Length: 363
Ligand SMILES: NC(=O)C1=CN([C@@H]2O[C@H](COP(=O)(O)OP(=O)(O)OC[C@H]3O[C@@H](n4cnc5c(N)ncnc54)[C@H](O)[C@@H]3O)[C@@H](O)[C@H]2O)C=CC1
Ligand SMILES: O=C(O)C(=O)Cc1ccc(O)cc1
Image (tube, rainbow, N blue to C red; front, side, top):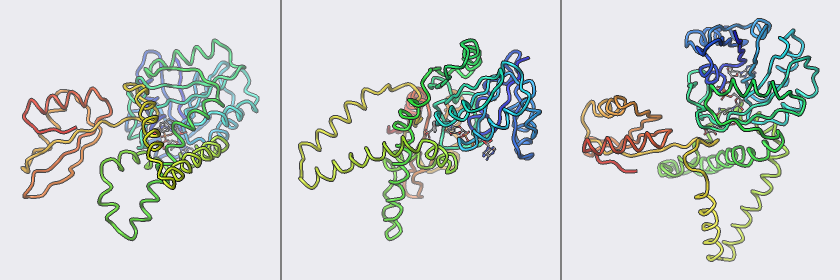
């Protein structure tokens, strides 16, 4: 039997557990300090066993995944290094930063146990075991950051196990990971939070900001709703990289200030052109670190049961909705329903199906 211990069975730990659970020869044990969480893991059947005892979870484990916030990883590595672990055991983590945990592992004397950092680059703004799904990592990149001390055979064993996630595994140096992911994920999260807070301050004096902030503003600031503790830890652990990126961001902002002061329309046009060209060169269909949301709008007559009819229509065809929102519903006007999908192909099929059923649909 291959025993997998998961410390912190939340969105990511729970999704990994669901990828492994029930697979031939695998047993999954979940750990939490909190007895109520242990009950929840078992009730939701994301793990085969669950315990509040670190010793019990780690004993005889072939793989240990640390799935808590980045700020607790070092403490867990130190605790694990003091336990009698199975020789050959592989410890991995799923944290969004990789250099600090690699440095923590390098300081420890892990006897015949190997640490291989990992970052599955898929997620959601929701957290907790309730949001976990076995499909989360499908077609997403899953970065692994083994140090030179990790034997090739151990790396291959982890790779083989992670094939159950159906992610695209990729080996990257831990420091390079933090620079690149800092730029494409952590910086956008800071910008989204700062932007929302800027507008929220204007809104205190005039609620028109909030009223008009539908659509585009909502979309580009979706990532501002991430878990505050998780993001606190990510940013503090990637502090040096973030400070450099924010200095560069200041330069980008300063450029626009100057262009506006100079009323330099030609250069403003060029900035948009340049951005548009790079953006359209980005891979479209692969799941990225910021998961896409595909949305369509359906005009719906105001009669009872209409939402049920639409969700049933899609459900019967196994089209997965990620969200549903009634935008307008007054007695004298038809309502508009916003349907969100995580997969573009599901949106395309929904569009076709709803049109066949004579609904008016807008993309
Ligand atoms: N949310 C996302 O989209 C992604 C998150 N990550 C990384 O995965 C890790 C987990 O994130 P999520 O699963 O989203 O969070 P989550 O909040 O859903 O789960 C975190 C788990 O850690 C446990 N935990 C929290 N604080 C703890 C503490 N002080 N001591 C012990 N256990 C504690 C919680 O009980 C929970 O089981 C983080 O390191 C994050 O950077 C990586 C990829 C995507
Ligand atoms: O799409 C989103 O909301 C995310 O930003 C998900 C996410 C968050 C943290 C990661 O390290 C990787 C992915």
